[in-house]
Amino acid sequence: MKKIILPVLCSLLTIMSVLAQDTFSIVAVDEATGEIGSAGASCLDDNQFPGSGGAFIISDILPGRGAIHTQSFYLAGNQNNARLRMEAGDSPEEIITWLAINDVQGNNSQRQYGVVDFDDNGVGRARAFTGLNCLDHKGQRVGSNYAIQGNILIGPEILDSMEARFLRSTGTLAERLMSSLQGANVPGADSRCLNEGVSSLSAFVRVARPDDSEDDLYLDLNVPFTAFGVEPIDELQNMFNEWLLTSVDEENIRSVRVFPNPATTIIQIDLGLIIPAERSLVEIYSVTGKLVKTGKLIQSKTELDIAGLAGNNMYFYRIIHNEKTIANGKFIKSK
Image 1: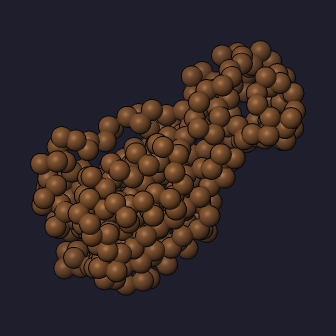
Image 2 (image 1 turned 30 degrees about the vertical axis):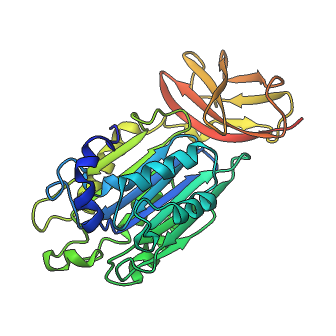
């Protein structure tokens, strides 16, 4: 699903800058897999602002790099500038500092941002910003690899619940993002939706793997609008559950091992006893998402020469069987 920023959003800019208060959201990264995630919901939807995609409008993911949420009196110009700063290599803290000085309308006090990325060693970084003139309740929760932010909330418990569920949940980044959204699945989480008895009117969840293209993400689900009284997070959960059924990795994914870690000249790839080596291969990516090495797996246990990779760096691997990813992870290449 390709993100639409221009030219459709330009036609919405004046209206959205006054009314848009995309309210609760989370951006996060998974250091073990190199995945980048984005999820959120709002009491504004695509019916009110055709072409916006509802809450989806705030989400911007750069696979292999990071993610940005720009919300509260949304302006496409600020979102585009934030992307340019991330593409230039700025850290989340640097991006938010730059936006404060260079707000398109000179009014950073109304904005809210959440930014995450990987540093040059593949370690997650996260920052958030909430302007003093965002509408109450407003706030943020930030950890080493996630940022949660919201405004026009029924209360601080929405942010607390989202954070607690993200931290407690197990499984993939996608599953943790959905769990976090469920933490806000209460009537009036976005206080404008209280009279309708729902948390919001639109919701989305997205995850990019290091090798994804921006218009073809590993997970990209959006509920742009719902009928009166229908909970969009529940609708999104149903879509997510269906997606899980069609995207489950091989049954024996946990039998795959890649070692040693750190490694110097060779890594061992053990597919286990049940997964056949035929039609299997491994891809190695840098922390910026660049494919740097591929290799065929000709037997259940295969050695891969990594001597040519730059030392003292983090790399991500993806193991593919029958054109389907069955395992991914990371390793350190020592000198």
